Structure formats: structure tokens, C-alpha cells
Length: 111
Image 1 (cartoon, helix red, strand yellow):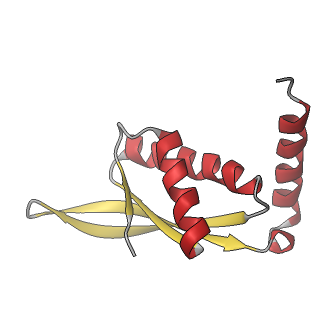
Image 2 (cartoon, rainbow, N blue to C red):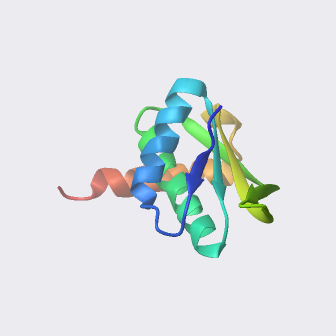
């Protein structure tokens, strides 16, 4: 499996599209970032991907991990986000409520 690598300059919508594509194909994706700005872009991308996938009736969950990465002989600590499909009914009630609220807001927004 290929890891989706995110930098501080990555466009969160482009990363979100990559996440959504991998999730649709493999039901699991890993996103890796080094540095606060890159982690920020990664988190935004997962949130955007959740919206993309929600349109297809796919719910996802995400959990962060620390991992060590070798960059030009230097060991760096990266954040790796594991993202996978979950059954919507298995999401905690508050998360289900947030998802429903966001759908209602999106559905009622004028075009």
C-alpha cells in the first residue's frame, strides 16, 4: 500500500481527493505528514474527504499514530493517519448527529 504524503504546501482538496480515491478502491488509506502545517493540511484533507465520501454513503474513521521516518539520513517523527471505512451505524451517536447536521446544512445551501 502506498502512503499519501502531505507537505505544508499540499492543497487539502487535492489530498482529500486522493484519500477518497484510495478509500473507494482499498477501503483503507494512510496519510503521513511531518510538521505542524503538514499535519494541519492532513487533518483538513481527511475532513474534506469525509464529505466527498459521505455523498456516496461511505463513512470513515481516522486514528493518528507517530512513526519514525528517515529523510536524508536523519530520523524524523511523522504523524501517520490511518483512515478506514466504518458502517455509519457504528459511529458514536454524537458523530452521527454531526454528520446529519452537516448534511442538512449542505442540502439547504442555495446553489
